Length: 293
Image (tube, rainbow, N blue to C red):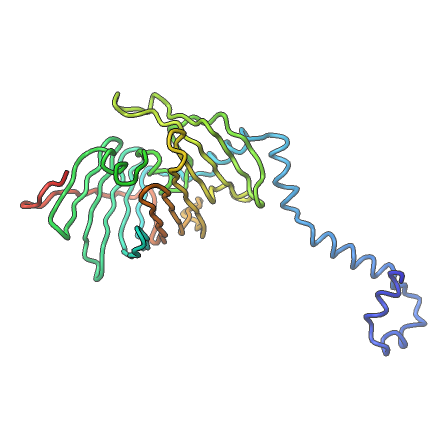
């Protein structure tokens, strides 16, 4: 069966009878429709995303990632979150305030907007107030990492909460590839820059890291890190629902999975996001609160 007879088979009899004497050839018409179908079914993005990998590689992607990352001095947002820990599910609302490379402030509220926990995190300290049992804690990252069975630092927390790449880790040694329509950067040896280590006691993290990047806006859509010394421990993040904040994009939906002895799954939805606004970071322990170790 040739192409012209194939096309005629799909035309009603009255149409072929009426137009059988016309000088129009249906073979070119069918060929044209077939060509349009083939070209429209091809994925132009596939060619688009292959070129930078082949011609530029990881260095090009890191440069584009840096150009399109969220640029801010301060950030504030409201959020709602659901988390699962040891099979138990809970939900809460809250507010986050970040002064870049300096301080992360979090307030968690239960029903009716009553604050239950307030947390303040700096480069070398972690503090929180628990209003449910009138306790407070002030210490370093050892407390958090003991609970999570991992070794998280301020830069990792800040980067994962904003959808940016790690700020104070070396950018070399990445390998670029394609994965399910996205760019992927992978490294098995990413070390923290010594100039960012503020105390002599801070351990030098050596990370295995993977980053997935959207080929259109060069924002991170997925990232994970794990330590070379603890390959079974992993922190993963997924970013979606990007929204313009001024001229920049911010992911309103985030999912975090911590795989360790104490697995934790958190889904966060942000709203009322603003950057570079004046803000305060109130943190005062009420009288009578008991300090926990």
